[in-house]
Length: 315
Image: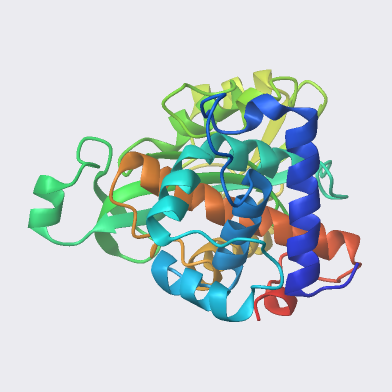
């Protein structure tokens, strides 16, 4: 296996095709009688991963590029409306595929996780806020890391030190980070987009897991609930508190999660998703999370020194 885009696309296609053969119920529902869709679901997922990997935020522009340069990889390339519609219906397939790829890496069993949330802006004008179908889910929030207000959602991610997503949730901008994390660890509410419902035994098989978070993950009851899950919390010492064990490790770990967020935003264009409906936003966020997971797995299996690097595959 080599670290290049076509090799990554081939590995992604094979993995998705095998998943659908083993679990055909994961494919988006369609009538039993009718014309078979083109491309196949495995080809659709592969096309979506390549779009995010190459940083294309316009579906129309991406499909024009694919017709000009990727004809040799796909038997059929859809028009933009069909591509958009099928991608939104394939959200559950993207989610299950992400978990399957994550468990097929050497870093899935890491005993240190990091957790953080990052803004997912969904609009900037008052007219957008008033008329958007996202109103009621998206809301005004504040990002202390960048000292800015925004209207949209928050992506909460639990990942390994190599940046491999373990669990995630997409919530309103004001949803408390502590509550969201506890929901994820309890296999989540149905209103959250998360992965842990696919494997509720995740924490049972990981005694003594360490979780690093920032100053928002604080509270005596909160830490007690994490301890009940067998999780040791590593966070900065707050003013007036005695020095916490492991405080010297926090800054390096904090740099890791900031780097993961930068990968999502700087290379995978997380905030340039252009989603206008809840289904559209969820599909596009899932597309980017799957792409990062795919790249980490591919780098892991091809022996690359930095698993989260997209450089070898983004051109």
